[in-house]
Length: 331
Figure (cartoon, rainbow, N blue to C red):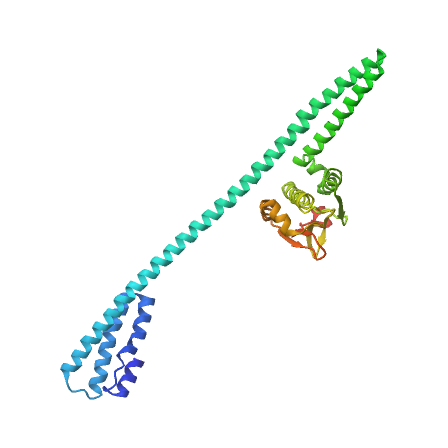
C-alpha cells in the first residue's frame, strides 16, 4: 500500500513497478510461493488503480502494462523458486556432510581411544609376564645356582663356588632389571603407591639407565584423581622424559607436579636440543599421543621451547574436587 500511494502521488508517467517486488520477495521467503503470487496480483491491481486514478485514459495501455508487469513478476518468482530450491539443497548437503564428518571424527576418536586402550593392555600384559613369569623363572634359577654354590663350597671347590656366586649375582641383577622394566610397562601398584612414588621412581630410573640427571619436584599436595588419569599422566611424563633424554640429548631434566594458578600442572623441563629436534626425531607420533592422552583426561597439553635452550612440556587440568571436612562428616 505504501508503494501504491507513492506511485499514485508521482503520476502514471513514472513507473514504480519494480519497487513492488520488495514486498513480493519478502512474502515469498517468509510465506511461500502462493502468498507471493497473491501479492503479485494485488500489486498489479494497486498499480493499475493508481495509474487510472492519476489520469491514464487508455485502458488498452493500462491492461497491456499490467500483463507485461505480471509476467515479469512471475519470471522473477520462478527464478526465486529455483534459487530457494538450490539453497535448500545446498543447505541439506552441507548438513549431511557435517553429520558425516562428525560421525567420522567420533569414529576416529573412538578408534584412537581403542588403540590406546589396546596398547595399555598390551603393556600391562607384557609387564605382568616379565614380573610374574620371567621374574619367577629367574628367581628359581638364582635359587638353584645358590644351591650349587653351597654344594661346591661344601666340597671345598671355592674357586668354582665363587664363579657360581658371580652367576647368582648376574641373575639377581637380571631379576632387578626385569622388575624395573615391568614396573615401567605396567604400573601395577599405582593405585596403592600413588602417582608421586611413580614420578620419583621415573626420575631415579632415568638417572640410572639414561645417563641423565633427572629430579622430581613436588609441593607436597596429593590430589584425588582416578587411576586412569594417573596412568595417562605417568605415560605423558614417561614419553616427555624419554624424548628429552634420547632425542633432545638433555643432561638435566626436571619433573614437577604442583598446583599452578588454581590448576594442577605436570611439567617436564629439560636443557636439550629443543623442540624442533625432538619433533623431527620422534616423527611427531610421541607428541601426538601425549596430546591425545591429555585430551582423554580433559587436560591441556602445551609444548614449547625454553629461552636458554631446551623444551618444556606442560600438562594442566582442573584441580580435582576435594570434599570438605563437613561434607565428609555428613557422609
